[in-house]
Amino acid sequence: MKKLFSVLIVVLSALFLAAPVRAQNLQNFTINSFEADYYVTRNEKNVSQVKVVEKIVAEFPEYDQNHGIERALPLKYKNNSLDLTIQSVKKDDGQNWNYSSEDKNDNRVLRIGDADTYVRGRQTYILTYTLRDVMTFYDDHDEWYWDVNGDQWQQPVELVRATIHLPSEIAAKQTRQPVCFTGSYGVAGSDCTVTTETTSDETITQVSTTKTLNAGENVSFVMGFTSGIFTKYAMDPRVVMLLIIGAICSLLIPPLVALVVMYKKWKKLGKDPAGRGVIVPQYSPQKNMNLLLASMILTEKMETKAISATMLDLCIRGYLKLYEVSKDKLIGSSTEYEVELLKQVSDLTAEEQKVVTMLFKDAGQTQVGVRVNLNDQKNKLYTEVEQLQRDLNSKVVSAGYFQKDLQKARGMYSGWAVVPLVLGIICIFVFPPLLITVGIGLISASIIMFVFSAFMPARTVQGVEAKEYLLGLKEYMNLAEKDRIAFLQGPQTAEKIDTSDNKKMVKLYEALLPYAMLFGIEKEWAKQFAGLY
Image 1 (cartoon, rainbow, N blue to C red):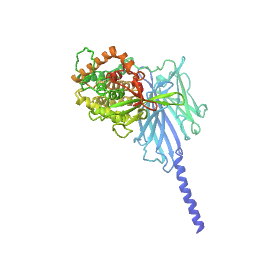
Image 2 (cartoon, rainbow, N blue to C red):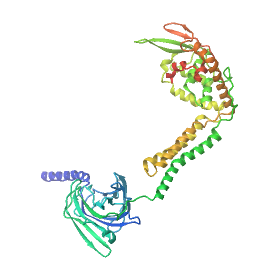
Image 3 (cartoon, rainbow, N blue to C red):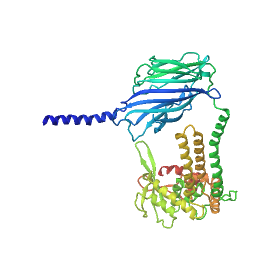
């Protein structure tokens, strides 16, 4: 009983161990025969044409290991495009094999068989395809040098036979007897024979191996012809011209269409109403205007310096107090700023209240007397800035300055611009080089749409008037107030009152200072708070 039990264990172990080994050795089959018929002709321009019929007989093991075979066919031959066309892949009974193909390394690899079906025993694969321009041209002759089975097979091949069919008018121009070679890459052997038979209308040359080829070994033949019997393929100039015109059109039409369509959209929906056309200098800020709205009206976006300008404006108006703090360092010292809330902000606009809330976020409250160090707020305010931008997008519409929410006005067209962008990328990377110009044209159209989307927010008549008023204020300040503000109210020149412990209260009183900062006339204050956002 123990002996029987031991035998059963050995047998079962062998079965379990054998299965994975079989599954891993996917090249464990043989090629019984590889036979190829080549029918050589010329077209009306004497360009060589070859119809090839390959018959491959493979012997697979009697267990589930392989789904079929792979056959690599050349797409190029000595820099010539062969115009490979697969006509059929059949079984020996005439039924079609299922197959897929992939182009790589200048070859078209056919994967023949079903992914969900294993093959066993003897299987026959009959491939029919055509080639063009297979000849090589020398000064004194034309030559056809061809590999029959290729050197990429990882199985032994018992027999390779190539049969070349030459019409009489081509066969009569042969300059020498065909020769053959065998061996792996870089090795020239002669384990093959060449026989020739002539009939009334063709000459048949047969190349056959005389021994089994090992994995990686190939059969080649060479045939020579009188110079000039074949002509190198050249594309019809009319076809070339059509391709050039098609490429130019596919390159130019998409961006041109995008330009025309987007210009019409902008002219209808994004163009501002006409203003006075003349900028009149203004000497004070417009009534009911604040710096955040001014930034939106001028630039169609909220610039972060508008937040800092609002902070200075609130200091001037008595809601905040600004302190300059000197911090000692290992080498020298640095200047930081603190702000203190002086009074309640319930009478401010919603966006100005939002600025105060942002500044005192870390303090957790906006009670009178709360003080925060602005240096501690660096890189913490960006989420509040994004929300403030969204709020202002709606505010400028409700206040009558813009016709439509700025983000929505841009977003609709930038969203549509993604479509040609994606299609263009697909054309370039999935279908090269056939559709590469189409892809570039589509991407160019997408860029144009993105650019136009930035200009789609349209001001109202009130918005245009407010913009011109602000430009008038900017013009006046550039002419008359720039130097005075820099001399009296800059970070280095403003009056400072000592308080305690290296802190000085900055005395700000100039009502136009925040607008000077917003307009870029006073740049030093903007530099002090640049890292906040």
